[in-house]
Image (tube, rainbow, N blue to C red; front, side, top):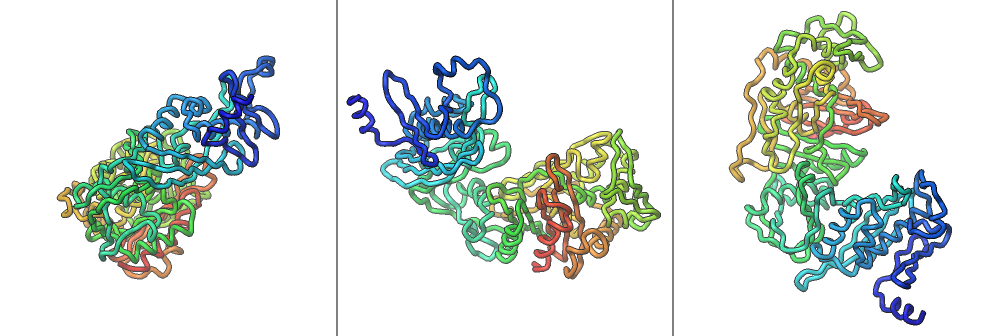
Length: 555
């Protein structure tokens, strides 16, 4: 026993403690036994008691199992025992790779992991360590969390492995690397020359990362030494940029000027901060310049990269198509029944309303679904796709904004799915940038690709649309949006917004959400904006006030 005690005393790192419960390692003949206070082994190790139990445990892990599993994993990780830590997860191979890179590639040492109070199967913890590279060291501190699950095959409780356990910024295939940054930093400026920082504008983190990735090598800066997330194939497919987590030695930043308006950006940040899961974009229709972009969830740029069903805001695009094809006219009679069946789907309006003897303008303003879907039998499967691409510049994946974006998707669909697409459901996917561009196209009469950095900076070519709407179609579409802003579903939100205005609301049902995503797109003079508030309700009540508040500020 004396020898064992001396070995224990030589350890530099102690066991992890969760809520006053200590995981004590007792060495002996190469076997480690973990003692838990407060009930049960809960560590999944084989033993005489386990051998007597023939049935496989089922159901959620017990409190003791969650505690014990978290202790085993965190203690092993803290001590640098990669194989043991990985064995405590449900994907030992993936865990081994990332935890090995933690020391070899990220150069993190002197690690202390401090768990917080357990919440069900989830255990939050704080990571403290030191990153050392070529004689330069800096402390690293951040919060993460793990979840314990039960493996179906043998009932063993294990850490539900995900890269985010190691660091919340990590996704599948990403790695942590400390070294000379491949891309120099950039100093991003607003249109007036002021510096853009996440301290001043919290939601701009992904935008600033994107600017660095695009312009870091050409903006005149020099690279420093950093700990950063290097994105893998899956993250790259979602257009996520590499992210700096810790700067050990500063590089010299280059300078990139953006089109953002400091006044509108500050207002946009304030507007989305008041709601959960809100995003908004403001454009200048006459040029395509992006004046503001903000998200209440700063970790992902939903405003530029979100892929969400836009609901009835898509009816702006659909209406332009129906008018061009002679299937609708603003002031002519147009059916709006309670129900319409197409492709064996029975479509209905919100609260099953109907408009008897109404015009297309009335149906647009009240957002009548059946008024649009009733025209589906007279359309080709690719008509909506072609309209979105040829007139509004959407769904071509060719926008060159200056940072990563999702440029909308309007796939060719048939039968019921095609009918659903006409009202912004089915396979149609958009984000506030796309829908702000739709309003900007209506306001200016021509698609101008939105951009955050002037194309003259790097000589890139902006996307264009192959054609414009006829003068008659454009006039009617503006009339529809103007009427909706004054008398339709957008009227309450747009009250007090003067000038040449137009708007459209939208609500998009999403599986497993009690409330729909609320959408709103509108223009005023030389401003166009769109926003979404997820899982919040109707667009006129949720996203509408955000958009209207920004339009009131003017350019």
